Image (cartoon, rainbow, N blue to C red; front, side):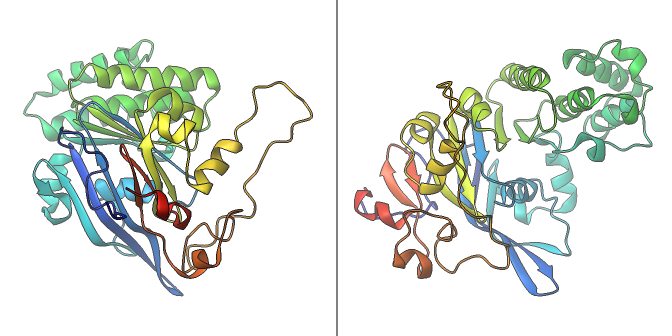
Length: 341
């Protein structure tokens, strides 16, 4: 089979995806012109799956997620091309009112920073209740009870009393739990979790992740997109992994493929940067050379060519395709052209 772009499903599994993102492009207008933050991103999400999206800051992970929710600020942002297919319709072509019905009930998002995502002038209870009242024909009393129940399920002590508290009265971990309650109170089919454990201690991180996965498992067929730079979390929780760099998908595969047989130089660099468990103090922690280029200074060819130890002349001038290596493993690298199926 010839090399393939990811306009076809990432795996040949017979099941149908619950969400398909195809050739997504997102640009932002700045003083110097147009900056392309997401450049032709495609991936599928299947029912009951936890899909990890990893990459350094600036790789386009969050912008791609916000595009699914149609939350890109326009202006200066613009979803300039692509499709986001959900439940038989392209979310990029539905009305604002239709998209409001999708958010919260069908697709929900845990935002990266709960202190800025929660409204500081409304009580926690009011914010959780509002989600229920907006999307379901229930009385305020029922919405109140639903909010209390969900706060209890995410581990907020004395939840009924704390319904009257404001976000600043909660710790970082407790605010993150509130964000999970807010996202799950209407039982969405898809949960997008954007760095849900950022700035939390390791114990709280483990509790938050377990809580999120447990609550989603209780809803049959519900799926999670977990956006993170923490590869250990991905290895522990995800079935498949999308590696992004420079606004593009660089590698896609099962967690086993990506962690035990990484093929893209960037993926190899990320894994090599993990602290060693050998206990040898003399081992120096590996770092990928250089820095992520500015969005306006991305190379014309492979986005990673300025930092890649395996770069060849072709990489600097020609964008590599996303090659199909078989068994749902896709890699965007010229060096793998001969290995493509």
